[in-house]
Length: 119
Image 1 (spheres, rainbow, N blue to C red):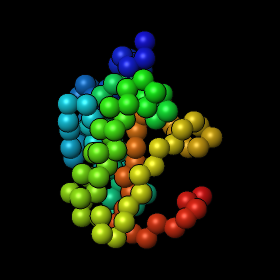
Image 2 (cartoon, one colour):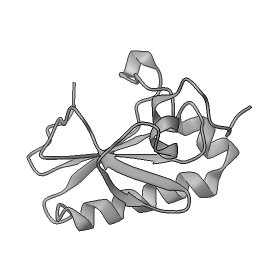
Image 3 (cartoon, helix red, strand yellow):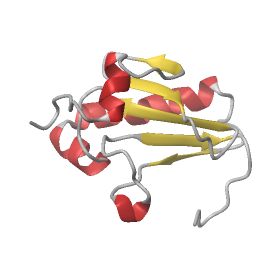
């Protein structure tokens, strides 16, 4: 069922504490943690505690939680001191776009120049 934790989902296991992560922020609806394979000096993932496979399905089903994810992106950028130089918030949707864990997540990237297009 959409929104319910999935037994085979890595990010659901991070939400429950079953899999460790370097958590930088947690709210009632989100968990943010450092990426294990950072692509920039600051690379934090933000996930909703509810399980949806991608940003579009989360936004459709629970728009308030989708807004929480974006709000946390701004807070993390502030905490990481990357707001002035700029940062990127990325949602990959589908394997063709590079999504490898099918639980909605936003990447907050910053701390170096970020070229466009990204690749």
